[in-house]
Length: 93
Image (cartoon, rainbow, N blue to C red; front, top):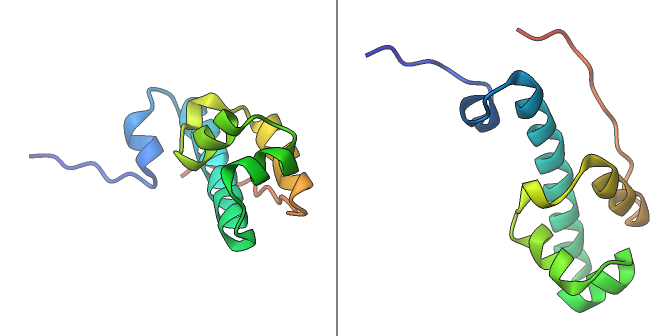
């Protein structure tokens, strides 16, 4: 059996390299925001007020519903949290 190695789960499950890269960026931002909310000890209602979104939106974030968010929304939330986003660009392997 030929086993293919993937750099990320997104590389394995997404149908195009473009989609895989978008999912990697979104999931990374979401994980950072989840950690921020946990570190601050915010309830979903408190986090929603802090970020200017609805509690169901925070539930989507906490539950890792990556397809529910675009990169712009996640970067805006990260900036509100006082998080700085760095993007590394490198040639694909």
